[in-house]
Length: 264
Image (cartoon, rainbow, N blue to C red; front, side, top):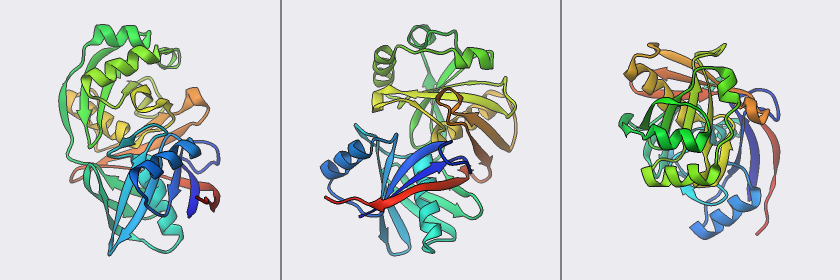
């Protein structure tokens, strides 16, 4: 089967967020084994069905309903192969997703909503830093959002991953997206998601879509289009773009750095 490694939210190889794209689909056990073998934060399996594409997403340890950067990676590869352009549909476990393929690849998330406030005392202990205004937001993936005061504080976060994983499982969130408005872009962020087998994700489409909705709903930063930087702590800097236009669209650049065949 054909396999690609794609760096997303960047045009520079070895930056941004890597995803594996497998142009085939198998039983769940096999897909999980492949994702574990490839050992990237997410592997996406793509199956064409008429004019639509079925996408399934796996971390090295679990299947998740939706992954923004892996969706962008999949449609970037499909674009290079001449299989897509303009508007497309992706069928995921989170629902049907609209995708717009042009110079950048954009996807519209599921309908966003705030699902509740988060216990900040336990979150502070698990992250080792003072956070405020913590809420859970879903955009197809349920994400915790919390603010710190400065970029320096953001970079100094050293979480207790076991405590944080338990915290996320108890509150049914995929991870915690910590941000600061102390940024050369609209915000800088880090996404910690040990409960799904990823200690820290470099640049996260769904989490940044949730962040844009959070900023609008709380009145912290009112805009129609946002740019968020992420990945500094992992030396994989990238920029995710989010537009609020008939829903929430998240998009970015991509570049593939590896292609090959995986044999079973």
